[in-house]
Image (tube, rainbow, N blue to C red; front, side, top):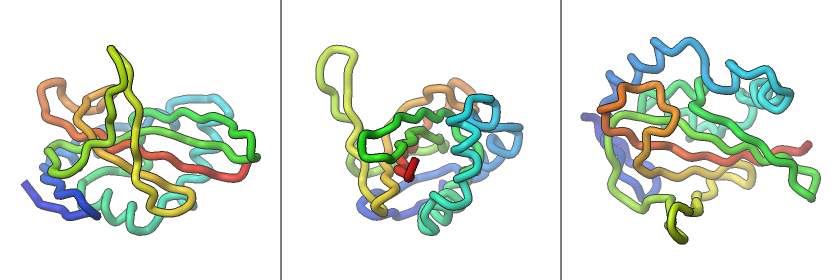
Length: 147
C-alpha cells in the first residue's frame, strides 16, 4: 500500500491494482454514452480538472479520463454542474463526504478545491470497474462550468 496525503486525508492505496484496473477498462461512463451532456463533459475534461487533482489521481493510479459515472444538471445562474465518481483500491483516514439524513438517503459534503471543482471520499463500489470483493474508496467530485 502506498500512502498519499491530500489536504486533511491520508489515503492508503493499492496503486498497482488501481492502475491495472483502469488500464484494462476501455472507456469511462461518459465515453460510453452518446448523450449531449456526456459529449460536452468529454470536451471539457482536459480543462476542468485542477492540476493538483490530476497529480492526486496519478498518485492513486486513477485515470481521470475513465469516470465510473457522470451526471449533470443545469443551474439557474447559467452554469452546468457535473457530478461523478472514480474508485481506487484502498482505504482512507479522514472525514467521509457522506452524511446520512434518513433511511436510505444521504447528502454529500465535498471540499472546494477551486471555485469550479470540489472533491470528497467515502467507501462504496457503486458502478466500479473493480472486482466485487475489493475494498474501494469512491472519489466523488463536482465540476461547475459556464453553460
